[in-house]
Image 1: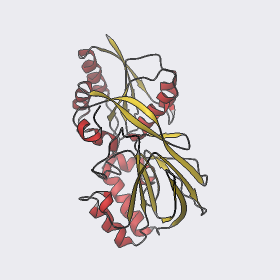
Image 2: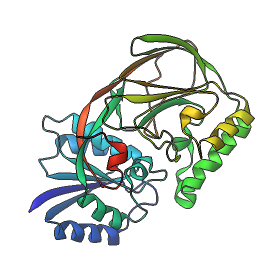
Image 3: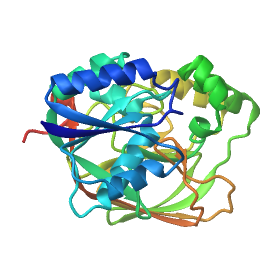
Image 4: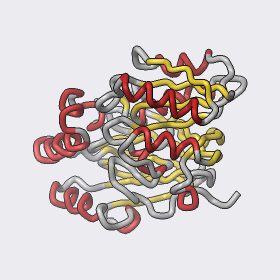
Length: 307
C-alpha cells in the first residue's frame, strides 16, 4: 500500500467532523493508501509538520487557503519535496473552487484521487510563499478581520457583510508607489494592488479568464479608485467581466516585480487570506519555482498549458 498523510486545520471554515475523518480513512484505504491523520494545533504548525515529515506518497491538506499555503511553504523547505494536494473546508475556498471542487468533502476526495499531477508556479513576496494571491489596500484584510464566529455562522456571507461595512464606513486611501514590472518602472497611485496566480480571487469566479497556473508568470492588478460608487460599480462589473475590462483597473503579467511605498501606512499585505507581518517599504515578488500537485481533472485544461 502507498502512504498518505492527511493534515487538517480544525479551525478552518466550519471544521470537519470525526465521522467524516473516519470516512476519509476508508476512502483512502479503498484506493490503496494507508492513511495517517494529523490535526494542526496552531498557526504555523502545519508548515513545521511538513518540513519534518518522513517520506509519504501523498500529502492532503484539509482547511482553507491559508492551510494550503502552510503545506506549500513547508514542502519547499524540504530536500525531497512531497506530492501535495488540498481539500477545501475554509470560508472562501478560492483555491478549491478554482480546481473545480464541489461542496462535499468526500466527493472532493474521490475526485482528487482520480486526478492528475501537474506542475504549478509557486510565487513569493520577500521570500514568503503565496499560492494564489498577495494583496494590499482596500478590502484585502477582510479575510482575517472578519470574526471567526461570524464566518462559522454565515460562511462567505460574513465576508460580504464586512466588505460592505468597509466600503460605507471607512475612507479609501490612495498610496504613492514606485513599481518595477520586469524591467519597466512605473509611478502609480493606488487604493488596491493584487498579485496573483489564480482565476478566482475573493470569491469572484473568472476574475481573469485566461490565467495559466504553469506559465511562469503572475497577474498584477492596480486600482486607483477611491469614489465609493465607482468602487461598488467595479465590484458589480467583476461579476460578469474579466478584470482587464473594468474601468479603474490596470492589469499586467510579469515574472518579476518590485514595489516601493512612498507613504507611511498602517496596513500591510495579505497573503492567501492571512495577515503578512512584514511592513517594510519595499517588496520583491517573483516566481520561485514549480511544484508538483495532485488536483482533480475537472478544470485542468482551463488552468494549465499543454504538457
